[in-house]
Length: 112
Length: 115
Image (cartoon, rainbow over all chains, first blue to last red; front, top):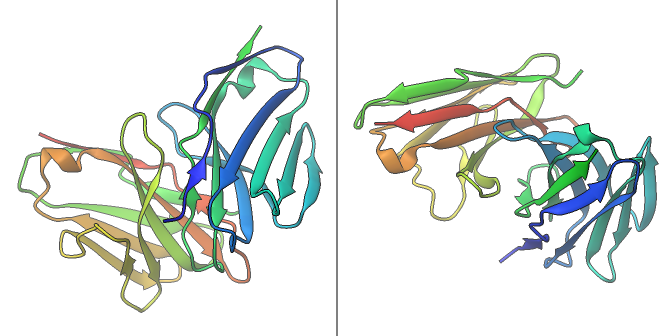
């Protein structure tokens, strides 16, 4: 059974601070890792993908992957109230023909 | 780029009727399309994977005779919920991937309410 675990939160962070979101996965054969943001009542929107160990930066977002520890994280710098949403960690174990296994998501609240 | 549309965005139907949901990739050809379902306060669960011109692959526990998937072209997949019941009420979301990539782009979702 492939599992993706996230702390459901809510995680409350002051505006301008760094928000740190974490995710662990059970399938050691997982190859592709994604972070999606989902606003209430909306579908997920892609923030970042990461495939190799280490850090990947895109604007205010940094994804970190550690395959040995089966751990993925997302850092959001200079957090804005508009970043308040549920952040979903998702994993693909095989190739592009495989669906995503999602975590339950972390509810992030940025306090103005 | 990478825009996926869904229609309708919401639908209300009576128990026992069938509902068809369309998923289209607007600016790319989708190698594979996926259908997910999300119940309130829960995460997305994969229902099935479809490739153009072939039968869909359903996840364990998803009834293939109840959730009919047709992937007629590289830009269109449809999900038909047959004989819908109140427990089928959910948020149905499709996604699509393009050639040589595993990044999935999601449609805006269809909220189904079965009375």
